[in-house]
Image (cartoon, rainbow, N blue to C red; front, side):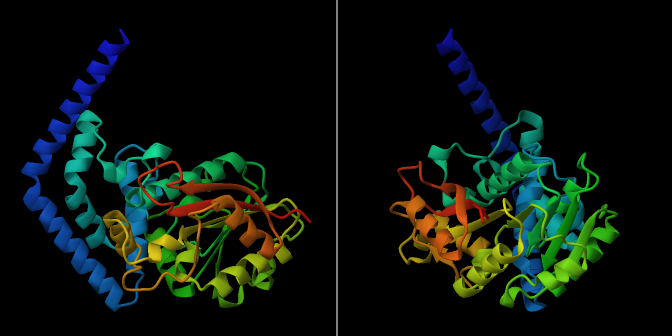
Length: 339
């Protein structure tokens, strides 16, 4: 009986793949047009210093939405209103994936969520998104304040306004120019910003809590701080300054969620999927400024770094640690203020 079920599953998967392959072949000209539009748009955004790699981060969430992995209508609306060209280029490029998924539930690797033993750097954006989602869901309702530090084009603050806790205060801190683009696009998209306070801030001196307090942040309340993707483009001394400033100004039992890449990503002889993701993150054109060596005893290495700042390691997730065929490539960690 079990064998029959397994055989049936294989037949279904084969059928789904055939549907995808047929659609992919039919849509080759459309896909190529989409790739050209995306390339042109990224070049244009880079020339105008308009954060092209944020578009790629946002596009991962849009694809996951259209392939029914996670609901995120806000990311779709935001991307459309930040760059219609990029949005339609993405849809044209990924049309075979979206159509095949909706017709047969086929999921190509690019939009899948792998089991830990199959994790690779290629799927790093998907893994990171899901890990942050899980942590936010875990603490939903436990905190009266949530702070997104260097929020970029993340839409979770918009999604949290739908929470059953109407009194929760949400703060978004980000570079002034990028935050302005996001606010303008969200207004055009008619995305609700209820209970969200946007604070433009240069983080080179750490988090300036005076600005947060002026906007209603209460230092005595337990707070959830989310620092997704912040470390990739900040020097180690600035990363430490940001974490230290949060530690010095937040209440006991506050949580800081932080992710970073492994130092192995900086090496020359790395797997092809590492090179692909480095390009995706803009780390070919720009040097990775912060990383930790987590190949040997990753938990001990992370704990040393965290304790140096005066925080406690509550939990950590190490991408690639259960796949014998790939190096550890990233980590998502929860830090706890205990004193």
